[in-house]
Image (cartoon, rainbow over all chains, first blue to last red; front, side, top):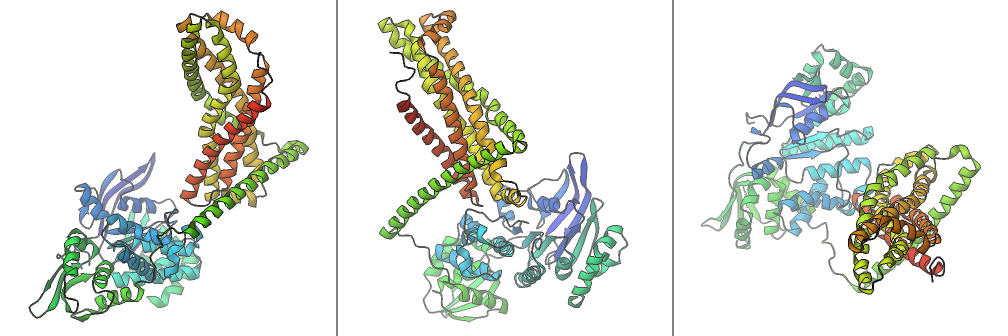
Length: 259
Length: 374
């Protein structure tokens, strides 16, 4: 494992009007980890994810990806850096005017490296990776169920062979069965492709089953960045509420066998 | 795993014993730079060769697809293939060619299907439009029976949006059209010394024809498109379904206020625009023919029968009704994707303007002997 963290946030400050969301937040995510970012509603988890993607710019602090500043270098270097990560948005954000297949082929087509036949094979391959059938390529996003949208969006996020996968609420809106299947899917992809995964979630089931490390966002900074066991040992009101509330305890008991 | 720099350059060469030696990173990122050269090299390799993977550091699915196609989708003899690499290529082998190429040729059958689709589509639009038309009257009958349910707030908000806020732009366009029309007419009239007839031309032309049609075109582009887009997005975000689930009629709360507001606001907009256009016409006549405002105002009622104003206002009401109804019709047909939204908004504006001009022709025929001084 290389020493350079895949994502390095340093001293991030975010302000929405008078509302201070992050105040001196720092976090370093080493390669190969599955990091779950948890925090209460409105604690700025998704905003932090958007900082990492570069959609928003923090009021202060630096974001570094793969050891390079997010906005460093020429336009080509920045684009090349953006192609090293894939994002799964909360609602999937599939292009509604394109079929599933075209959605998955889109980033590759933009890159302009693959021939039509190779593109078709890659689309089927990515669909197979997320356990979808070749026939699904012809469907429109509006014809898909919630779980299928997530999987198709994940296939698109994987299209450019990313090293870093960012997932925003990957299991929100899925029933427990689908959600468990999606978790298994991400875990097997992580294992096969050696990805670094950052996921925002508030589903204890998901993070207990998936995360190798948990970053707890509270009081405008990361108060803990450790494995699940160590996180549970900490005595902080948010951590107690989040993990040791009734639902959290049940979830942890259910996942107990896996750890 | 993640390295600081793109790893070793991917390369391919043929060894002395005929083996093909691959080396470096066969990943999308490493490959994209020198891809055309690599493709050419791969194409020139001997068809039957032994492929040596020993020096390959990383292989992702793009690299595997590239090789698989270079192998004509068949396993060649390989050596030094790591387990993970074998799995990647194996997966390509399993999924390759499963997605058929999309049909590109356009045949006679497609033409017939296209024509049939267009006809059925037109029929669907006609039926939907008539249904919406009927629904509006049912809703109207309903609120006349239950006056407490009048959507007055919505109507008032819509009148403000489509009427009051449209006043500056219709005034500007009306004024300029009045100036241009008057200027061109004045040039001709001067030749015949028939200067005072400018009032007849402007009065009849603007009040009866130009005012209503001009406003309709502007309103169709401005408010019709907005109504379609609004209803369309409400369909995409399931807001219309939410209304239905609450037992609130979309016709009563969404369609009726828009149709009513535009039907009421359009005659007023027509009046306003015609007045400003006449003012523009006078300004031009004053400059060109030295016509006084007093004379203009005095002559206007004498040469343009008041019936023309009524016809203009009636046209405004009918055109407003048509524009709003067409906008709602297309808005409610939007399917939950961006393409459908843009198609329907375009169709809404184009259809509304076409229908307005058709209706204007019908008006012209129906009122051909009314209000024209002989």
